[in-house]
Length: 280
Ligand SMILES: NC(=O)c1ccc[n+]([C@@H]2O[C@H](COP(=O)([O-])OP(=O)(O)OC[C@H]3O[C@@H](n4cnc5c(N)ncnc54)[C@H](OP(=O)(O)O)[C@@H]3O)[C@@H](O)[C@H]2O)c1
Image: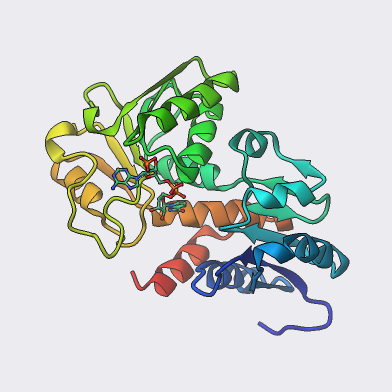
């Protein structure tokens, strides 16, 4: 890829950003489609966030991904926020055409799961009630799941999130409870949004064991390091269908790519770049 005077710039803002997988993934896509774009990463100190957004506008930057710690704070500096991102209360993508914010994390998870099964009319159990759970839960509601059950170690947080999702009026059935009381007998899909099983603590007790699972269950783990987590190992032993966390990274990136460029993202190329970068 040759960077020229005409090259369009997109990138990531966060603090820190140096280990991001997004530059190799997006640059591989631009190269494949022979697009005059480059994706880079900017380490933005929280105190400089407003200046960074104003500066990016002035520099005619086309789009940003936004990561920790800016996902909530950055909304103050945008002209428009996508409806679901507003409900989630966080954005991870900015389109500078209209200074509009989106949240593609949740869509990323839905598209990952939909490689295996549709979420529509399904009974879904989500473990965890933090940022990832919030993004995924609102999108599950938007994509028409029948019943959403949010389980967390701190039950009050699960209750609060389930009330917020109910208030959106995107869904009628939202339940909450304690993660240790999980029952999957009536579930079609289990989603882990807790860091349980994440490197370096890979050999811990999973949030659900194979004995709790059944073979029609789809198990998605948002944890992507390691690729095959202790939870996905249990799913495989139970003959359930595993969905890998890396797919969420892939599809959230693909969605951002499409928002910025209006072009269909080359999924295979992006996936190869991601797996190479992560050494999978
Ligand atoms: N694949 C992807 O694209 C993607 C995207 C985003 C995030 N993620 C992954 O998702 C995970 C969560 O991220 P997040 O931003 O949502 O974090 P977060 O906001 O800190 O939320 C963490 C959640 O996990 C729960 N939790 C933490 N440790 C636990 C334990 N030992 N046992 C049971 N529950 C536990 C917390 O429960 P309490 O409320 O009780 O503390 C909380 O609900 C991370 O591993 C992250 O890497 C993946």
